[in-house]
Image 1 (cartoon, rainbow, N blue to C red):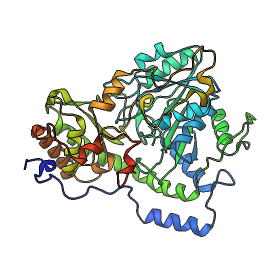
Image 2: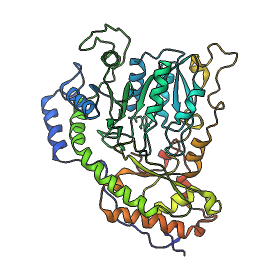
Image 3: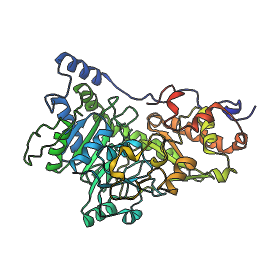
Image 4: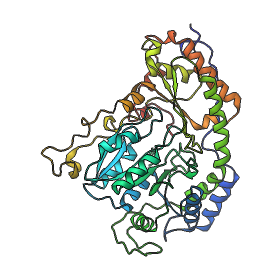
Length: 438
Ligand SMILES: Cc1ncc(COP(=O)(O)O)c(C=O)c1O
């Protein structure tokens, strides 16, 4: 029997952390009201609560217009379509992100171009963009994650120089700010997700924000079966989908938005406390806080574990042990999309991958993004935001658990344990074994 819980010792933490999602009577009353109104859906578009929420959400982030949509994946598709991305166009994306950032590019028969991430932020490395540009590049799709922002200054400079659209994937960045401007409001459009794990949620849901009326009109048509937009100044006509949000979701999100700033402060204070306690621990690394990121959105607290420092003890063992100490955690949160089982791209399905080429683009083997691969398979540690919604003691428990596992890491050498197996599983495999995956 060892000291670590995974080898039979006493866990640091037995009590659960704050549940997620949180709700109050406000959501319950709102839902009751919508139920009683019998006006549940998004039609006629835009329905009242969804529209009011979307406008409020957009203004909260400093944009003029907002659309409440079905989820974050379609928010990205809508934004790409609204930006006029056409078959064969190239869209630059970070390799290290959720597959849902990339799928919508292919669904428009456009071509994703993967660029590696910056090791100091885990977001798109703007220094590598220039090399990825071709005559077909039409847009850059940065993803703000790990409490960081992609360098929107540099991305914007390049976009202006090459007449490219910038669509920000803000699925992790509700309430975050870059140079005092809200997430999604610096680029041409911003896309958000309200899926269950996110900083605001209605179970599912998404939003697109923009300050450009033409994009807003096109987005409205695209998500509302091609119907004319409310203002219809630009008279765009296109084939669309029904990607509308229900009033039931919107009424929940209205309540969640009101709560976001206060929750953000609590999380931030607890994450800062955790980081202050972990800094200096040998074998750990930390992402950098950019001063231009004037308000942090803390969807997950992310730090780096260095297997080399622990004589090759893999991250999965560290995470399995941490989980057994009572701390929810993840490592294979994202993979470089081109390597992911959730990206089984076959060029026969996506004709643009073959256009103008002797051989179709082999998306699975074309890329090697070393920083993304290291983050994904070796070093990144992701802690979910809800465990930071409690007291400072909670943050101390997290720190104690991490430090304990590091101190007794030799107990993990060669250890086999189901908790370690789960931490080595990809997001494609895990739903088979996890009780809850948000
Ligand atoms: C970075 C990123 N982009 C896009 C999405 C897609 O959002 P959704 O799951 O709401 O479709 C997610 C969320 O899961 C995400 O984390």
